[in-house]
Length: 301
Ligand SMILES: [Ca+2]
Ligand SMILES: [Ca+2]
Ligand SMILES: [Ca+2]
Ligand SMILES: [Ca+2]
Image (cartoon, rainbow, N blue to C red):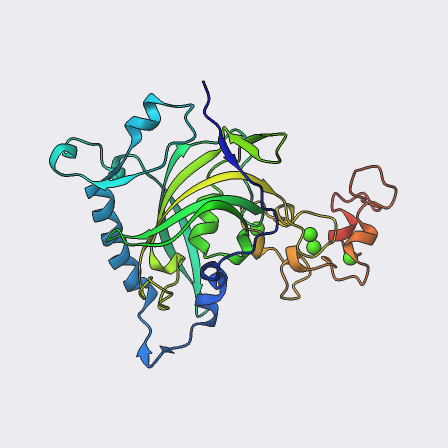
């Protein structure tokens, strides 16, 4: 029998401070941070990679519990060292997948690798990297220190979190829920993941609370539900303003005005707002007046 996770849905809970920095760390990085020379991200990535691999090889999670109780949504993801009576456990390293993520540093793309482990897939669609997600999470350093933990779910917009968190959460699907008479929700069949990021996908040279500078981060996340965001209010969800379909809506700028389409209410720069030329006949299909295969909102002529 399925054991539900019963929770209040807090749709308007604000994000904790820790995640609000995020994206612009590299973009805003100057040569020095608090008087210290900022480390070269290419070198740092190699060091972080070594720390993460060691962590993954020497730790395991309670995969046996998840195998034997697939319907128990009260199970917590527990990570422990492979030692003593746990000496025969399968290391995380044998269970992870990798994802390549480029980070822009001083105008150059620096390749990073993050690791992720899907504990439960989740039955619903995966969020795009710019959707809003309703999650619980626990963040720890590779020495085991838990630096942040939310046991009650909160909403994050994935554009406002560190890149590794955005990448990690978008690897799993959301779940389903039923509503109880008392206003609580039962969540089930939701995705759960563990991901492991080099500092370049976290806070890099900044220390934040219990997170020291240049710290690789480990997160355990449950994704209960998600919904698409429309950052520029033009009627197109931000995830669908990924025109080149590379999974990254931050790098699409049809009119070349320096503002990504997901934040540009006039995507083709023709002076007509996207929302006023998207679907003027209201048939649910984006208009293409000159039939050239380019919808009007992306077609300046
Ligand atoms: Ca939009
Ligand atoms: Ca794109
Ligand atoms: Ca737009
Ligand atoms: Ca336009």
